[in-house]
Structure formats: C-alpha cells, structure tokens
Image (cartoon, rainbow, N blue to C red):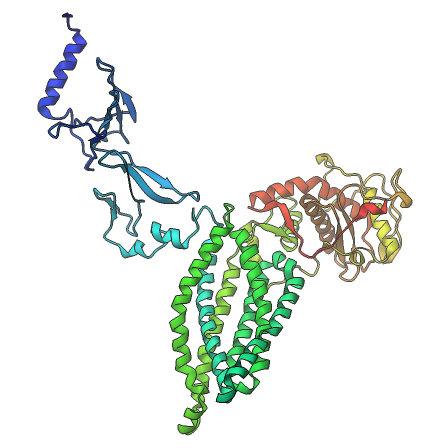
Length: 611
C-alpha cells in the first residue's frame, strides 16, 4: 500500500543520500582510534561506513525508525565523535570513534586503572593516566601514556600510580594530615641513619664477643653472654611502659626526640664494646637497658599517637603499612653502607695488625669516632626535625593554656592557629611559662589545707552558672558582682563568701565540673577537674584559670597569698561561662579539635562527694 511521502521524510532521505556520497556530515578533529564491534554471532559488513557527527549534548536521541529501532549518541564533549548503538532486539552494535573510558578509583581516592570496551564487546583495562614532570601526556591507541621525560615520574611515587600504591597510603594526599609529607621526609632520613647504626652495632657486638673469649670457650661463653645481655631489657620495658604511657600522648614531639636520643646513646655504647671486649657483658647489658626503654617510647608513638594524627580517613593500618614498606626499602639500601663503614674502620680493633704495623695510628681512632659520630648525629638531627615539622591539632594542657592566654589578652578576638602554635611549641621548649596557671591540679595544689578546700568548693557553688551575654566580664572591669561580700584577702586572711541558700555544711559544686583554687608553691591560680569533666568543662576551666592569672600578672607586684581572691574567682567563673562558646568557635576556625583535650597524667576528683 502506497502512502504519500511527507515533506520531512523527503528531506531526511536527501540528507542520507548526501551523507552516503561524502562519507560524513561534517569533519571532526578527534584523532583517537575507536573500537567497533557487535554482539557475538552477529556478522558485520567490513565496508560499512561509520558516520561521525558533531553533538551539542552528551546524550541525544534520534527519532525512532520504523520497526522500533532507535539510536543513542554518546559524546564526551562538544565536537567529539559519537557512538551509535542500535537497540534491535537481541542485537547490540557499536560504532565509535570516541570510546567511553571509565576510571577506576580506590577507596582512598587514587586512580588505579581505566576501563573501556574491548573489540569483542567485553571489558579491557589499561593503566591510569599519569602526569609526567613536564606536564605533557599523550595517549596511544593502547591507552598507555607516553612522555619524553620518563625519569621524572618513573621514580616519583607521587606521580607514578604503581609506586604510589606501593609506598604511599591510598588517597594520598587527602587521606593523610597536611604535615605528613614534611614529616615523612625527615623520618625516612632518620631511618637511613638508624639502619646503618643497626648494621654497625651488630658487627661491633660480634667482634667484641669474639675478642673477649678464647677460641675453645667461644661457643658456650659467647652464647651465655649474648642471652644475659638482654635480661635487663625486659625490666626497662616494664618501667618505661608503666611510667611514660600517658606522657607520650600528652607531649609526643618531645618524647619522640628523647626516645630517639636515648636509642643513639645505647648504640654508642654498643659501638664501644670492641674497644673493651673484657667488659662486653656490662656494656652490652647497659646498652640493652637504655635501648629497650627508648624503643618502648618510640614504638608507642609511631604506632599510636603519630598514626592517629597522620591518618585522616580511618586508615591507620594503611599508613603504618606504607611506613613499614618505606623502612624496609631503606634497610636494603643501608645494609651495604653499614658494612662498608665498618670494614673501613675495623682495623682500629685489630690488635694483631696494629702491633705488626708498629702501633695503632691515632688518626685511625679519630676517623672511627668521626664516622660513628656523623651517623649518630645525622640520626639525632633527622629525628629532631621530624618532630619540629609536626602540627598536632589536638589540644593538650600546654596548647590549651597558650590559646586561652592569647584569647584573654586580645579581649576574646584571637587564638593561634594550628600552624602558629605548632611552630611556637618546638620540641624541647618549656611548655608552660612561670606565671601560667596549674591545669588539672592535685588537691594540695588547689588549697593550702582541708578547710581551704571546703572554702573553694563553697565559693564555686555560690556562683550561679551564667551564659548570658549581657553580663560579660572583660579584662579590666572592677565592678563587684551582685550578692558577693568580700573581706580582706591579702596576707592570707580568711574571706567568707555567702549566697542565699548556700552554707558551708551544704556546699557542692554547681555543675561546672571544675573548682578554682590557688597553688601556693608556684603562687599562681590553679584548677582541679571533676571526675565527670568533659572537654567543654576542661576548656572552661582553663579559661577561668587563665583569666585569673592574667589579672594577677597585670599588677605591678603580685602579692604572696595563700588562696585565690574570692572576688577575682567569681569574675573568672563568669568569664569562662560567657566566653566558652566564643573561644571554641575561634579555635575551630584555627583548625583545632575541641571535642577532646589530652590531659595526660592530670588527676580528677569526685567533688560531688562533698555535698
């Protein structure tokens, strides 16, 4: 049955005729080779032309032909060639000059490989894109990336996907802290020197062990000495683990440097054993004692505090595993270096050779000391620099006092950022100034005697918690808060503070979870924490104590006293109540975590038992 052709059909037919003669509707500049194929069992015409079109959208549909066939064009961008997929029942055809490529990304966010359609319609994978050092990359028909500057990325884990998977945590650098890169540079430098030291000390101990025994008695005696030298190490580990655990967490930078310095001391003792082979057992045992204590602190920090800080994606295991891989690789490099250094200086310990040569040359001893000193000094320096570049965003007592002091002195407008505080903190610098308040004080540091303890608890109970902004206490105000009667607080005269309904027999803290007092030994304000104190209570307590200390330090001559002035104590309580939230807001803006405060060995007390 014939039907009169529509004008649109006639125009479409004419366009098809023009396309058949010209081979394409319009030229394209895309030079990638496409992949064409069909479903298994479907034959294709090798001479079939593939039409290329410009597209303006990523996905466009052409009007279905008669018989239910439609064509979907997929393009990557305007001007790219497109793929045509026929939806005939049971048949899938693909003509493409711009194959769709899917990047595979690991859980950490790093690109691992790429996928595209194979010639038979399956899946084909090839390496992920790599960015060479000159910033130029070129894709071949196989999907590989080539570059003129091969060495710029072949040996750089940051640019090479294969090396990145081996040496760096998944998702680097977003999955680690900002100071990971500078820390790891100095840490890897310290590992090189440390591995060289291990090789040198192992050879020194074996040489000393052989020199201090006769050949016939060497096996049994040497084995006994080797076992006995490790006996004191267990005692040292017990002492370091029980006494230094919380201190490692509160001040990790300082204890990291101290632990590595102690390890260097132990290595130096072991290096001296060939010079005194008769003293092998006491020297080796002493070195083991010191080294075990150092390794306890070092292992606790690198496996605990440092990993928790460096990991930012709950990837502590991945960060630690990559650190182990880096260390093992450097151990292979350090092995021949250590052997070479020891062989170069081993002539100093060969008594027979020295006697044949007419005595040991004193310059040989100097060369030996210089070589060992350079290795030990390099390790100590790199460990110190690794601690310097760390920027912990967790608040401890020292950092909290630093931030609170800046907040009070700037009238509640500024606190140091993580970078600023980390640079000011240093490694071996004093954590507290002479006039800094005592945070987390013990009871003797809070009051002079038991009666004074009841007084400070009663004073805290008499100050209602006030978070209203209208009664904010600023530095320099001298108004007496309402409802407070003060007596002479100088020279240790007892001052009575009473509020309606509060007596000494019914004194209890009001819910602040901290109590202000006076540290007579240091002549500074102090604050003790309740057993149920949360991080926000610790922050408020530090603000209150710092405000009181700032007011006292602003005086020309601070009087010697035995308890905190009640008027100043009440001002400090109110100041902390009203500016706690503002302080936390500024701290967050500076990059600090305010949901946790590391208190170390600070004691806490159940003040509610005083009710």
